[in-house]
Every structure is written in structure tokens, then in C-alpha cells.
Length: 344
Ligand code: SF4
Ligand code: SF4
Image 1 (tube, rainbow, N blue to C red):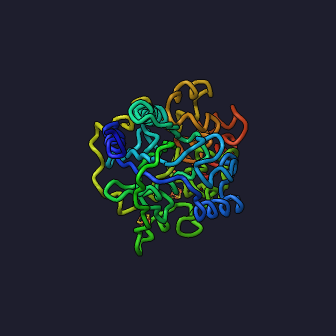
Image 2: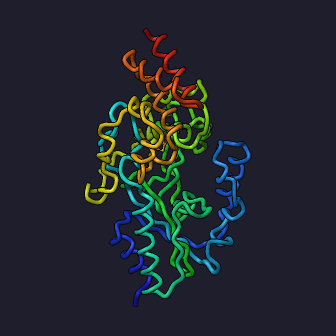
């Protein structure tokens, strides 16, 4: 008979590295922490995180699945060892170095859900960033990993460079044991953050986080946070790179081929982005996670990077950019010119 063991085996055979089961039901403590985080405004301009706040308490809310009984959490590692940024002169977060992960992750989840419908006669709704779920709370409760002080899900033996997705189902599955925090006395991630974005263990103020600032934040970046960005053009991995749980060997390269550095970035530099027309950037970035912020924010980030690590040879492109455009990238270019000139 086909049952939970076969379901788990099927998920692993599709390429997920960890799979956990947990019953639906209120996430009271996690939900209370989430509400407090929102009420403090720590989500910045990511207004969608405050939407459907009540639905996030449980996986049974309207729009997810009537008759939901279990949540299946699937994790996929994108860890590719010491491989560096695909771009010259700028750092790009690990998850964004290859193609758009949403596509192939969603495909795997859909294939698992289709198998469940066919083989188990189950209702199965796959979710990847499409429904209001507190997914790290579900991952912890399903035993996929624990929530580290850096707020990431850490799966012992696998690390924290993980993509998470859920399938909500009407099957009653045997629950896995929730995983409690295993950080011990370590505080490396809190100390490593270049912009001091952690208010406390597990509590991130996204408004100070380089990932938020470079990807989601509209308009100019607070001047006091720019130096902390260093050469980070898109995202940041520092609080994960220092984590001892990420010293584990990454999965074999063929399993993470979708995250291999994208060749299209090989000849792109921050100065090349500043010199581009917006249409050229949009065409170049299509199908990449780097498309998300749009050209103005990417040009703004590129100018901040040059303001931090550039030299006098970058002044012409910064001047040309400041004369050609308006908005936050112009302001950042003017700032970068002043920074480079001040350094002499
Ligand atoms: S991603 Fe970077 S900036 Fe954000 S909390 Fe982690 S270390 Fe700090
Ligand atoms: S760096 Fe240390 S404190 Fe931070 S998540 Fe990893 S183990 Fe926990």
C-alpha cells in the first residue's frame, strides 16, 4: 500500500534534500512574534508581509485548502561550496547566482503534488512564496531544521542555504518531531552582520539588512548603512557564511546545477550597469533573480558599491550616470563621486 513512507521517498527522489510532516493547527508563539515584528515596522516597505496576518496563524485559512490536515515541508539546498560571485567587482547572494529558482522549485513541488493526487488520492496544494505562510515556523515544526539566531532554518548536516516550499494536504500524516534551537553559545552571525541588522537573537530589522536594502527597498539607501554594503550588489550571505552549520559538505554539484553561476554575468560589472540603458538591463536580467529590483535599484546599488570600493577610474561613468538619469541611482552616483573624491 502506498503511504507516508512512499510519499517521503518520492519527495527525496524528486531531488528535495529534506522532507518533514506536521499537522495543520495554530502557530501561536511564532504568530505572536510575527505580529510583534510587523507592529514594530521591521518589515520596512515589504507591505505584503503584513497582509493576511490572521491567515498566517494556521495553514487552514481561506485560499489555502479547505479540509487541510497536514503540511509537508520540502527543503532544497543551493549550497555550492566556495564558488564566488558570478559578477566581476560585486558580490551577489548565493541563491541568485544561477537561473530563477522559483521555476524549477515550483516544478518539483507540483510533480510531488500530482503524484499525491494520483497515487494517494489526496488533495494537495503546493505553495512556493505564493501563499501567506510562516514557512520557517512550519519547517521547524516539521523537523526539517531549527531556527538559528540569524533567523534562518538550519538543517543539521545540510546547513542553511535552503529553499523551502510546502504542500498543504488533506492527508493525516504521521508528524515529525519539531526541532529546537541548537546554536548553543554561538553568536557569530549576530557579530558578522555588516549593518548590525539584528535587534536580538532571531530578530532581524529588515530595514537595516543588506538583502532588503539592495532588493526590496525603494528610493535612496540610508547613508549610514551604505558603508556596510561594501561590494554587495544584490543580497548578502554574511550571517550564513559564518555559521558553523554551513561547514558541512555541500550536495554534489549535479544536484545544484540550477544554481551554478550564470555565464551572462561574466562580463557585467557595477560600472557596466551604470552605463546601461534600462531596457538593456531588463533584457539582460530576464529569467534571473537579479531582475527583481529593476534597473533603477540595481543602478543605485552599483553606484553605492563603487562609492565603497571604486576608484578614480570610475568617476567618468558615475558623472555620466548622474547627468543622464534622475531618482535614487542619480543620488547614489553623486554620493559615490563624493566618496571617491574624498578618498583621493
Ligand atoms: S543578510 Fe547580511 S545584512 Fe542581512 S542580517 Fe544577514 S549579515 Fe546582516
Ligand atoms: S552562526 Fe551560530 S548563532 Fe548564528 S545561526 Fe549559526 S550556530 Fe546559530
